[in-house]
Length: 491
Image (cartoon, rainbow, N blue to C red):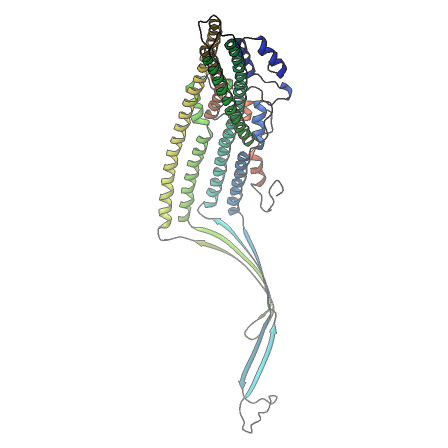
C-alpha cells in the first residue's frame, strides 16, 4: 500500500479508518527504495569525512602549523649570504705646484705655479660571501623547536575535535532528514485518511445519521491535516539543504539508521573517566600547558650568553687606494663572537614573569576542559536514557491509541460516539506515531552524541572502510626540508 497510488485507492475503499492508521505507521517508517541503491548512514559519514569543507579547512590549518617546526629547526642551521657589487667610478683631480717643464706656459708674462689636472676611471667590483652559525643561545632554538612540535600536536587534537563535530553533524542531519521524510509520509497518509473520513461522514449526513456540524468538523480536520503537510514539506526542504551542506552531496533514498550503543562505555563512570583522559579538547588543553612551559624557557634563554661563529670571504677588483689602484684583492676571515646580556631595561624579566602566569592559566584551562567534557557526558548519557525510555513509552502510547481508535470507531457506528470523537482519536494516533518517529530519531542521534562526548567518534571506531587522513604524512615530508617552495602535493 506504500507503493503506487492505484493500490492505495483500492485500500482506502476496502479498509476501515483504524486499519488505515495501522498502514500509516508502516508507511511512515519504511523506505520504498531498493536497499542496494539507497544511501546508508555509514556512507553519509564517509562522504562528510572526505568532502566537508570545514574539515578540509582544519586539515589545511594543521599542515600550515607543521611548517612551524621546519621554521624552528632552521635555527640550528647556518645562514649564508652572498653580495655582489659593481659600478663605475670617475675621479678628476686638479693640483697646484711649481712650474714644470712639461706644464703649459701661462699666458701671463708673470711667472707663477703650475696647475695639473689628473683624470682617472675605475670599475670597482666586489663579491662577498658571509656565513654565520649559531653555537649557543641559551637553548632557545631547542625550546622553540619543542614548542613548534607541541603546537603541531595541539593542532592535531583540534583536528580531532573538528572531525567529531562534522561526523556528529552528519549523523544528525541524516537522521533529521530521515525523520522529516517519515513525518511527511505520515502527514500525507493522515490527509488521505481524513479525506476518507470526510467521505464517510458526508454519506452518513446524506442518510440523515449525522448533522452538518459533523461534516464541518471533518472538513476542519482535513484542512488542518493539509496545512501540516505543507509544514512538513518545508521542513524536508530545509533538512535536504542542511544535508547537502554537511555531507557534500544531494541526499538520495535514505536507509534507516541504527544507534551505536555497542561502542559506548557500559557505565556512566567509565564514560566520564575515558572522556576526562582522552577527549581531544582535554588533549588541546594539555598541549597548551606544555607550550606555555616551553615559552617560559625560551624567555629565560634571553638572559644567557649568545655564541656565534662568523666567516666572510670577499674578492675585489680595481679598488682605488690612496696612491695606487689594487687590481685584485682577496680577503677571508673567521671570527667567534660572544655576546653577554647585562641589562636590557628589565623587559625580559617582565616577559618571564608574564609567561609563568600563562602556565598557571593553562592549568586552569585544563580543569575547565575536563569539567566541560564531564558535564557533556552526563548530559548526553541522560538524553540517551531518556530517548530509550521515550521509545518504550511512545510504543505503548501508539498501541493504546490504535485500540482506542478502533473502539471509538465501533461506538460511533452505533451512535454512542460522535464524529468529533473519531477525529480526535485519529489525531491522537497520528500524534503518537509522530512522537515515536521523533523518539527513534533522538535515540540514534543521542548514541552518536555520547560517543562524541567521550571523544571516540571517528571512522576507525565506527569501522567504516574509507582512507583516513593521516596528518603525520605531511609532517614527515616537510620537517627536515632545507630548501624548496613547493608543498608536498605540488603547489
